[in-house]
Length: 102
Image (cartoon, rainbow, N blue to C red; front, side):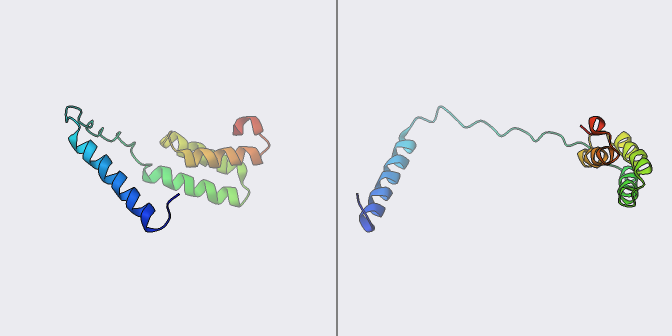
């Protein structure tokens, strides 16, 4: 086993040999063009943000039925919102609805 400079030199030689082989390889296979980014869903609107903020405040005040209504309103405004869905699940769990929290 080589150590120190000998190992470094051997590694450099093997890298340069690999580079030379890659340069000599035929160029018939080009790398695929990058795919366009997937379109992003629109962000939650101001009303959905206000509903979520109000729901979190109500949840912290232990007004769980009121919080659940506001979480539902936020999710209705923006159905793909995982943050609101997670909070709603925690609210349902706290209210004893473990089946509805899943």
